[in-house]
Image (cartoon, rainbow, N blue to C red; front, top):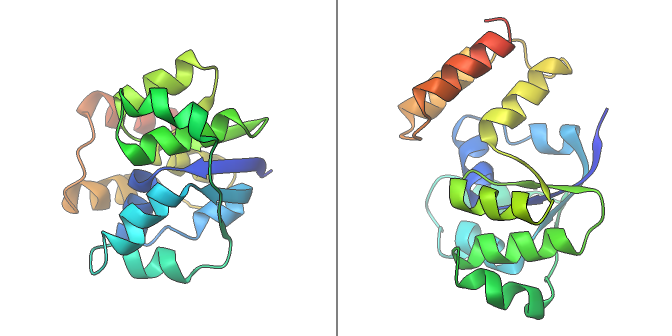
Length: 162
């Protein structure tokens, strides 16, 4: 069952493209929104880097501008993309925000915004049968220079029965 809407920060977009699992997003969510700053981080500033071409070519991402009044106070606490993503999530009921940064996730949690990171997306994909195993994808993230706490890896593999 797909969730209604997701708002993506750059981290999960880039991570999923690095491990060739970007197409999980439209299978997990009926709508995927990206604020302009995240789009810019991934496709313009990130031109030539992993994820830029893949993200820029999909038709299922909607670029949506958040309320600037909500962005401004968040900009003091997190980077511009995360601030826009959190602000956008505040304006979309029953959405989930895709965030890997722990500080941004804590802020989203304080604002009662559901959040999930790249590893959580993989676990969700396994639970609903979109992928068979998680371990190869976690290994691939690590091989691509993505830091994941060992405690999180152990917990997710245990939860996934791997």
